[in-house]
Image 1 (cartoon, one colour):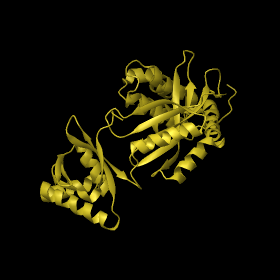
Image 2 (cartoon, rainbow, N blue to C red):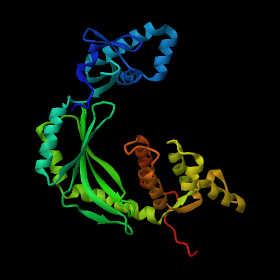
Image 3 (cartoon, rainbow, N blue to C red):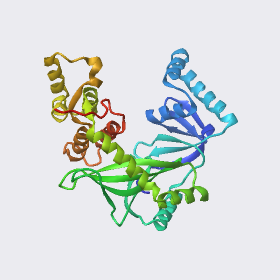
Image 4 (cartoon, rainbow, N blue to C red):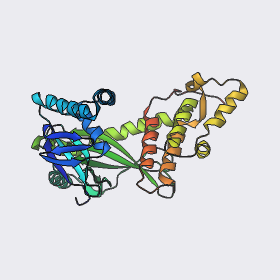
Length: 340
């Protein structure tokens, strides 16, 4: 709780734009970050094109008046509430979250989280919050019985668990698996969202607890992942999928040479070119090196093993998300038989 920045629930119509990145909250003027202003515009329905057009035509004063008009007009028929977050360090507003149904306080969330642990056989194994102080908390629950499921050869074990993720506007429930990816004990965590609620009434609380206690809650997810594994492990990766997978690494700052070492897209292209078969428009039909499962493991292993970044670096998460995107999509090259 101490890691969270101060935040306050207010009426959206009570937030007035005063000047460039300055807002009045119930009569008190407070500076704001660029991120706050951009998020505020999205909430009231102003896109970048509209903002630029008004500013060019009427200047900063015209943009201020336009923002305040749109805010008031959009709240006449259906008043909205928002949560504004401030940074004690920069002394400015840093984030604004739109409330869909009702504000969910962190105290109410932790009461529910404790109830969830008491009602199920799972125990709290981890609690994380956003390092920047934005109100966002994730509580992870682990099965003390340590259920495992063998999907692949040797190293592919899955462990059941679930999580609750909180923000002032909603609570997300999902399950996760921890997959052992190598003999030294390195694991990769896969998460799946199952439900989102925008208020914590007794009805929502009962439904989420019942959902976790249902045997189908984890079984469905395990069966889905097993199907993905089955397809990916026998589906040859296409040249197009290799290129996109390599770009996942490069987009996170990995040097092209290192990305090529991990996923040899250029080398495979050269082989096709030397044989006179390469066509950029038909990369999705060209067999690459290995299976989709092979490339998935290359990406996940790099994300978890590299010493370039700290353990919680967002770039690891981005690569993991990209890897699952590859696993989750329909393969370019459908299962085939090959005598060679």
